Image 1 (tube, rainbow, N blue to C red):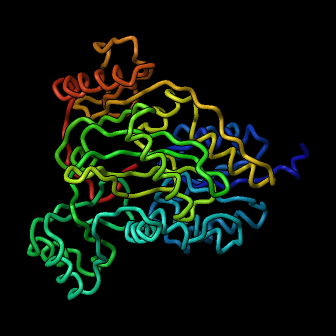
Image 2: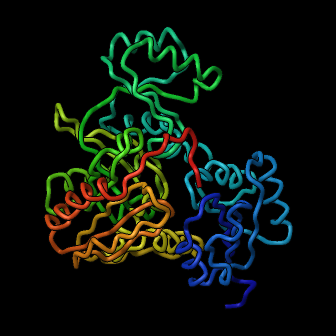
Image 3: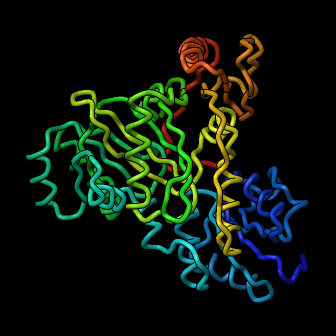
Length: 402
């Protein structure tokens, strides 16, 4: 292909992730440019396949990032802009609108970034959602607390995972928290706390239709692990189970209804302990973190990062995307914060172990089997042993860390 005919994709990531996306875009004949932050200048980026690489200081304003990107665009035409990390999605949505480049704009991006907006959208689409309210008009908030029984959770509207979420047991707890937030309180929502088991659905959408789905269940809820400490586990559920069938159907209807046209989604649902029904918690237009993509790939053979790249390039070229045929294996992961920088997991030697996770001050494994029961049994055993051998605790961050 003539280089002048090769499409160019500009990617932004302020976290170290998405290397497979970059590599797949290049393998498909695209020119790839990456913008990251100075502290990740020497991270494990596939620089040999990049046409250009830029690093910017941390903490730039949106206007400064816009100036930097549009300066580069004076000499290079960009056909697509992609945010590899959740926290860059709003910046990229703004840039798409400013530079008039196709893709999700700011309003649609809010459906998958702003927890208040996404709840409204999911509810309008017919999904069950825990009772919630905006934090804005105090009389409205007071009435809501009188009507909806505690406990509640106060959630930042635009963070990820369980960062910044706090459990509230009384109106006094809420008013004290809001006073501390001051002018930031409108950037939160208040939601009824629903106890139950939490699941995540990782899916691929192409032209408004969900074409691949992987349904998994967490061990302890991520919020509990983050706030109380403990070992994180997740596993792909038996594909013949009621949970898998119900969540596959809910997700297939909900993602397009929320405005997803093409790309990948990581959505979370909770099965209420009291009524056994599935409630929507949140959805992101990105690949799931915490090595979830590795678990999905080892079980199904589907690399969500690479498929996301294939969808973007197919659309850019006016071609049809075809999802791969998945394998029918099962996998799960066990992961925890560790007391030592590089914990040795050699004592764990089951033949089902297929990956030993490498992350500073973390211990982690991924197991795989044709039997979902075997995966579950291994994770339950390993979670207890990890807690004894490795587990460290740390304060819950107010903001995400790279």
